[in-house]
Length: 198
Ligand SMILES: Cc1cc2nc3c(=O)[nH]c(=O)nc-3n(C[C@H](O)[C@H](O)[C@H](O)COP(=O)(O)O)c2cc1C
Image 1: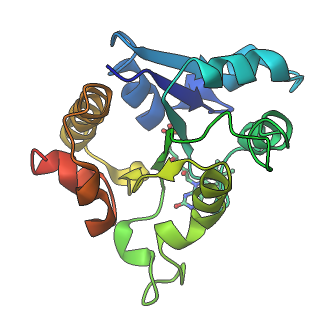
Image 2: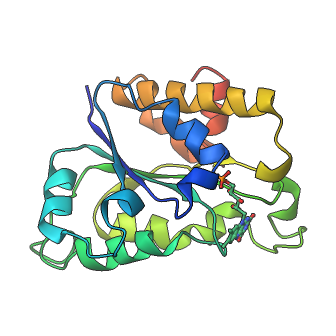
């Protein structure tokens, strides 16, 4: 069984609809640790050694947050700047994360149609997530296709429930290694693998 660490960041969790529901749907799962960064570090003073210890104790690292300004809420960047240290996460002797998997889980206000070369946002979600992809790659991790919930403002309760159920299914699939690595490069979002029952 793989151990999954969710680095969760929402600066206004009490106002959250989508991510609150997503996180609530998986927090009871065995082998899954929810590391709520804004709750833990309201003053942004990240305990680097404690975060590195958590990374060492897990096999799959999840960056879970709403999509803010085509990226992540600020604490995710602060976490990356401080925790992914040279000599720990990257560099000749920085091999602590080697072989682990990393994945982004995001919700966006924008619908899928507005992402990509023909949409008003010009770039695809995977293009916007390139810094996460390459950071994971520099740390010798495998970056999986992201789990994405689009159109958060108009998402029906029923659709949100489906996403929650798929998020839970994804966690179990990754945790129990029920998914063949070879399928990842074929899809834009991991959602399609989960929806099609792997
Ligand atoms: C500061 C801020 C920046 C945002 N930037 C984006 C963005 O770049 N693209 C997008 O599609 N939605 C953007 N949104 C919308 C959020 O992604 C959306 O409200 C969120 O995913 C909803 O999740 P929640 O119910 O958990 O808050 C932004 C929202 C805020 C507050």
